[in-house]
Image (cartoon, rainbow, N blue to C red; front, side, top):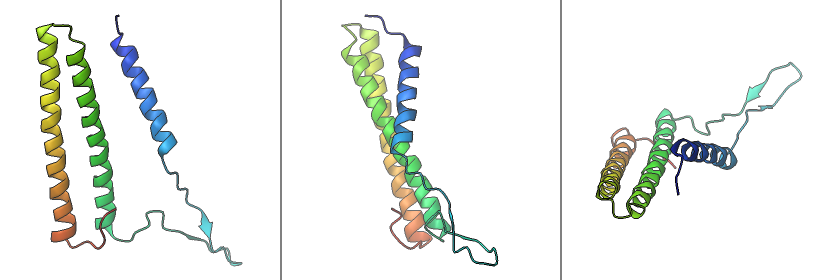
Length: 130
């Protein structure tokens, strides 16, 4: 069975984008407290006034996305290895993908620990960041 890599990648990209749109929590800004004078006040869409917590949330979200990519690399490396059909080059390629995905996951966890320590222990941001 011959796979077209571009077609598989495009399908995966489309699926990922549609999944992102489906699970995304859209929070639109809306005006409240409209008074007779025409003054308008807006709710804070960030739900926090602390820049440390906001930056921590951005970093947590980006680390979550990168962690998901590491999981996809594990699956991809496993498929390459399983579908090698005895081809030693493809087996080695699958093993290398799994090895580097593991290294990437260690880097992701380490960066998460460092960021969490800096944001909440050194800077002293309130809350847990979640």
